[in-house]
Amino acid sequence: MRQLLAPDGVTPLRKYAGYNGGGPGFGGQLAGWHAPIQGADAALLPTFYRGNARADDLVRNNGVASNAVQLHQDHIVGNLFKLSYRPNWRYLGISREDSRALAQDVETAWTEYAEDPHCLIDIERKRTFTMMIREGVATHAFNGEACAQPVWASSGGSLFRTRFKMVSPKRIRNPGYAADTKQRRAGVEIDKNGAATGYWIAEDSYPQGGAGQCRRIPARLSSGRTAFIHVFEPLEDGQTRGDNVFYSVLERLKMLDTLQQTQLQSAIVKAMYAATIESELDSKQAFEYIAGAGNDASSPMNQYVAGLVDYYEAANIRLGGVKIPHLHPGDTLNLQTSQSADAGFSSLETSLLRYIAAGLGTSYEELSRDYSQVSYSSARASANVSWRYYMGRRRFIAARLASLMFACWFEEALARGIIRLPSSARYSYYEARHSWTNALWIGAGRMAIDGLKEVQESAMRITTGISTYQNELALQGLDYEEIFEQQQFEIQRRREHGLADPAWSVSAPSETGNGGRY
Image (cartoon, rainbow, N blue to C red; front, side, top):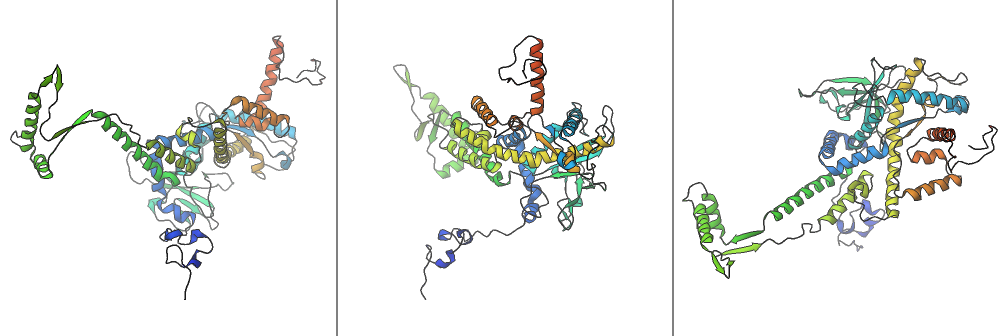
């Protein structure tokens, strides 16, 4: 029976029906590709710690990887991760005015606690709240997770006892390095639904070494208070631990590192010698000379070199004052001319960096710090794509970590009477935890490539009604409430000093007798 064959002349053409990716491919190029069907944990956990260790090594020793982590910290968090408290006042049954008054009290108390330069929020006394979030974003980048443990400790100088201990994800493991089970995977205990119920944390064994003892920390206390914060973004169901952003580019980064070192060594070698003398020796003589070389003056190699030295010292032939080199018979003088050490290396490096940038979610220009071949429009497009990625990470990693930490503090602030809920509220704190602790977190503003154009664009969005001051100022990393309050204060101060109101101040009807000004 005759049948149509594929281009390889062997495979029946009917096997190419449907999706090409599931077949052998054109010319059988996919025939040897047998990818296993695995869940997230099955693919990740067997080599989980090795993969994270490799990412750690790259971040410590590779400038590109280190810059990628720094970009995550600077764009997602910035120099201040500011609370914008927004209780769900409609659901809670309180007025908007009560909500704003509560927000002012909460934000003031939180800033006093969280950004104290003595770092009372940190049990180790090393980090402010913003520094903790920056660390969490960094560890999430190269370890795939951000972890913190709320602890209770008393110390002078603070009204609060809630503290936080940042926990490295590499310390979460099975006790005794035991194998994973259905209920415990890579140090995380889970229930039948896959929800975490406890974590096994290894003690820091440095400098003694060894495995270190593990202790169990529950995920939540009986009261519902968070006992361990574990933040990552799962890719599919059943995933217990997070995967770092370097997994897809680890191999390329390591190869680029080796390529750059080899290229640098090659350039150094080429720059070390201006000229070389090539001598004609057959293989047998060369190996005899090399094998017989030593300190003995009678060795073949030493005798040969001594003969060359005597010859070149005696060959002092000159013509009109200019020395004429006369080489030993069989020798050739090779002048090492100055040549470009690039040889296509820059193009290859750029290609690799673009691939790595795509895998890390950053733009090539930011990752390589190379803006030489970019226009305003292309730079803006590239920055906007990266900005969307950073905003996703801010929302689901940094803001989630911050909100869970804020909720722990908020509960204590209520218990101590420092914060009082409006009496008209429909629900108590324990009946509506999320509504009472709902917050927006303002981090770094979007980078302005052309400040004038972007300010004009922002002003047009406000004047046309398609955006608000809250949204536009948040894009700049600012809180509109603080801006309005400061503007009002500055206008009042200008009037006190006999200065005119700012040009942007708009006249409006007023009953205050101040001339209808703002």
